[in-house]
Every structure is written in C-alpha cells, then in structure tokens.
Length: 189
DNA sequence: AACGCAATCAACCGCCCGTAA
DNA sequence: TTTACGGGCGGTTGATTGCGT
Image 1 (cartoon, rainbow, N blue to C red):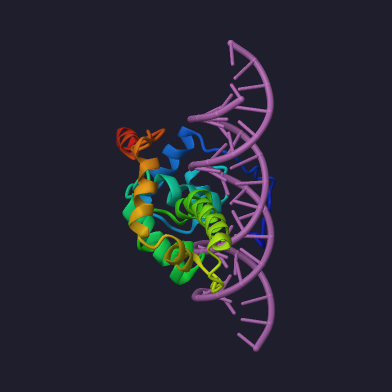
Image 2 (cartoon, rainbow, N blue to C red; image 1 turned 60 degrees about the vertical axis):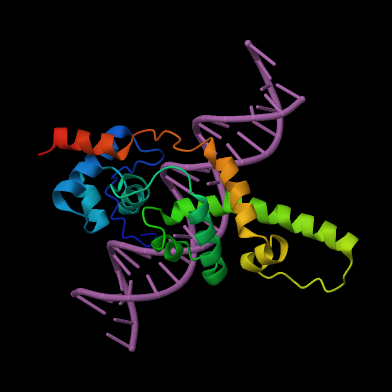
C-alpha cells in the first residue's frame, strides 16, 4: 500500500472519521458481496477510502460479530496471560478473545493495564526499599510483574480492575451494530 | 460556568511478509 | 529468481470526552 502504485489519477482519498453514510455503504457492500481485495472493494463500493482504511473500519468497528463494551475481568486476565506469553502480538492475542479486535486490546493494554503495571512497579520499588530483602529479582515482563507484586494476585487485581469497569458497563455504542445492520437491510439491494 | 489536564479510542502510518506473475 | 502488490501488524497520533479545580 505504502508502496502502492498510486496511479493516482487524482483520486481524492478521504481520511479521518468515518461518516454514517460511509459505514452503511461499506456494510452494505460487504453484506452483498463479501470481503475481497480491499482496494478494489473500496473502489467498487464507491468509497473514497483506501483499501486499508476500509479493512480497518470493517475489522475494528463494523463487523457484526464484534463484541462492544468493556473488557471483562476474565478477558483482562486472559490478555495479561497471553501478553506475558507472546508480548505485543495483539492480533494473536485477539484471536483468543472472540469479538475483540487487536486494536481494542492494544489500546486497552496501553491505557489501562500498563498504567496498573507502572503503579505496581512504583509500589514495588517503594516497598522493596523499605523491605530491603536485597533479592530484588529483576522483573522482566507483565506476568512476572503481577506474580511478583500482586501475588494474591490476579484475583485482587481483577476486582480492582472490574471496580473501574462496572460503572462504565455497557457504555453506549454510538451506533450499535444491530442498528447498522438493520439499516443495511432496510437499504438492502 | 469555564478552563485545563488526563484518559480514551478511532484512525492513520510505515514496515514487513506472503504470494502471484 | 525477482519484483510488485495487497494485506497484516504494531506503533503513534489527534480528536473527543470526562473530571477536577
């Protein structure tokens, strides 16, 4: 893509947030024709977007099997375990969380979990200063971290995490997929 | 009520890999 | 074998929203 031929016959390419109309066009097109080569799909659907952009929009937002709403404590646990195993292989991790996207997990990791880890880290350094049982084993990854610092551990944290989640549970989707899909069927050709 | 800051998330960017020609 | 292209992925950015002062 980057190396894309871009025979750019001055085909203007739209960027930025997707409009409802674009969403509908894309959803509608895929419902009727299925996914395909994204570049040609974008053209065929009449979208002034790159294939990449369409693919991203579809995978991260429009897919009907997406699970919206907050990450559950169980999911968070799983993410942490898998991240400890595989590192930042978000798409690989996402495959084990049905309905979740790599982007979503990545964002979640960076904004929430990483923060928790930092807090745990600072807490640990503080307490190891005071505790001074010099065997401060180097903590290499998340799992180690959580094992080391949160021993009673995931449970305790899960509670802490979920506490934050609860009040946001089911934060409204701007457009639920049901909405989009039913619109699409109304439109359907 | 207004402002500033922090958190969140959608979307883009650029690199890499697989594959077809 | 090489090259061009499309797709996938991880990282980053920017807009928006929420919250505290």
